[in-house]
Length: 325
View 1 (cartoon, rainbow, N blue to C red):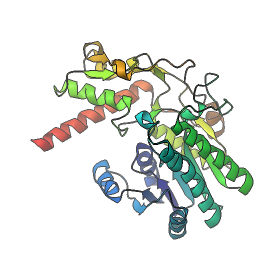
View 2 (cartoon, helix red, strand yellow):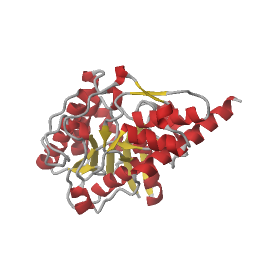
View 3 (tube, helix red, strand yellow):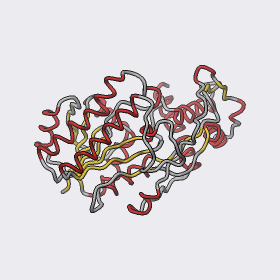
């Protein structure tokens, strides 16, 4: 039975990967920093069977010990400081967790078993203010925040260990991907959650920044499937994972409120303090390489994604309110 180690398993990507692996006769090891959070996650997420292990991203020896004990054949690294609103918070900590920790893990793999296959969850933030649109694996990289810089360092180390030591190591350059398990700090989930509260009379308005800001939004489950495909190829390589389409925050609001029988214009207010200017170059991914080499295609479209998130928040908020009665 194949053993798969997933770091950051309590996030949305970790959940969908565990869910997809559940039917593949795999032993799933969830590496976590907070064991209490892991137990809560298992209870509320209806997640598949996972064995949890404490994971110290700042200790290479601790990583070595885990690899020695569980002997995984595949490792997916989703552990990272958040993107979203936290990209400028604690630049040193972000660099350590999102960058140096990946180098530690690669070195642990090289020390214990060079046959382990490794996938690093990278980010479109490595492109910064892109010089071209859409962005592909060949686009010039120039991160403009600590989060993107740390992810770029991790990508560079993946390439170095692949070329210098022959490790099967790859980076998935992920554009924005959402799901019902996205955190409330992210604008997509803020929209769906607040829209449901407005529908139920629990809120009266939704305050957002620039409604015309556009993003390439996909479904987290589709992006996890792409990463699984990456580790099944004869040769390791890096891939942009994206839908190739952009939609505005306004589009997201319109669909979310429309699904609830509401008009977003009656409830959404622009908050100047949260307003961000439009990007000079459109942020949208070119995933042709993944489509061609992996046979990957996104299966969940934009409207379906928005409606899925709204429906999940309806169920969540009804459940939370019933517990208070």
